[in-house]
Image (cartoon, rainbow, N blue to C red; front, top):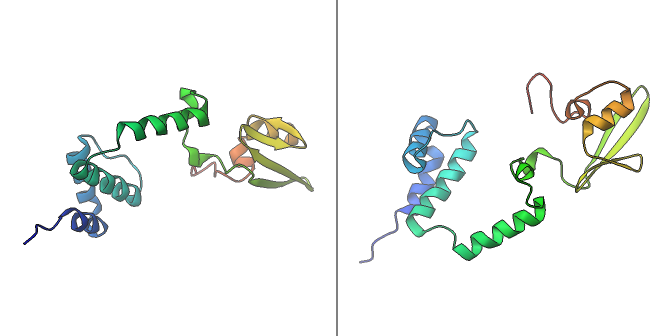
Length: 150
């Protein structure tokens, strides 16, 4: 008789575990307070951690490779590496905003934004060029609600 691996059942149970219990598991597995993120995030990170502890983590070669790829993406800039990648729209995304009857098109580039054939580092600079006043570019282009956050 072979011993059955309990990990798959433990992972499946995460979906029906109450949020307070997920947070308690977080404290036990990470030895820290759970972050204030949504339930799906807690489930996915707990699932990874459970498997990591049971089967082992990434191999040192894999970690080095991921670090190298990350440095290629952010140029080793520690400030850039702390910015959540999902905050910036995907390269090639086109943002359209009408202002005083004129439609403005901004394209997301790998190092910022393009408006009227000119590169810009921030959406706020583009919003200021369009309106002549200071704006939060994310709010101006509808990517962020200034009352609620993202």
